[in-house]
Image (cartoon, rainbow, N blue to C red):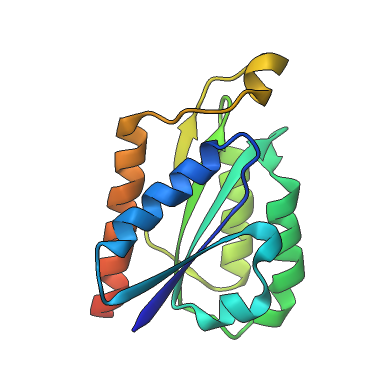
Length: 163
């Protein structure tokens, strides 16, 4: 059985919704074990045990969130040259752009020599005031559907050995 590890960080709930929708799509394949962990709970052993990954982070101040960065800092060298060629996808929940956080994750994944299976899926909430930024997020059905489809495609590729 193949394993997909979804590592995420979320404060206002937006990124968690993206990660859960991706997990739902991936779990539609019974030959795949989906493991979803919040970034502080994910360790190098989890990374090494997985066949593929989804990294999901909010963009904070034009950067991935600090707890996602902490996850990569803690796991990077322990997994280096031990996970080459494995599949990954990126999810970013952003207020206005998201591309810089996606680019940071892509650079780390490149160092790990992972294989991107899709362009980063970025969802913009358009939160621009302190009140909107701190408010609980509600992700629209179309964006959640895109996440489910990404999860299902990643699952199929892992199970079939495409990735």
